[in-house]
Image (tube, rainbow, N blue to C red; front, side):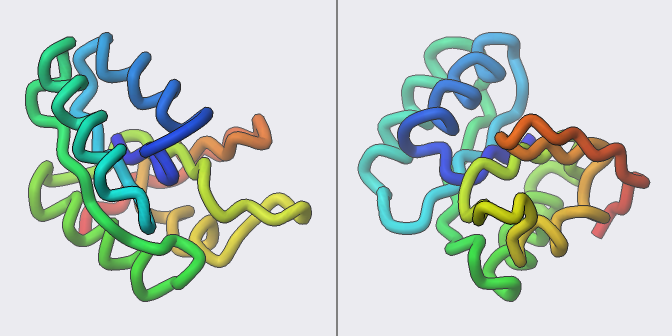
Length: 121
């Protein structure tokens, strides 16, 4: 599972909770490399043994696509994607549109849940 913007705040809390449940968590960050790496270490100690950090500014569609490609390269597919970062007041960011076909389930932290067809890149 990918949690965008998960080095801090709500995204971090989501990643921590899912990691405790054993999810393979991709910690996405734009500029917070240190906190992201700290979170990966914590996740590996508490149940998400394959947690990784991947840098991508998900407000940029090309970087969002790279995040998806790197995740699929490491894990084969994306089951859940929590789009916590880069959500403007309209609800959908550029990254959200890139993400819509990338996972079985895309969750926006605006509490909107969108079921999506599973697409393996």
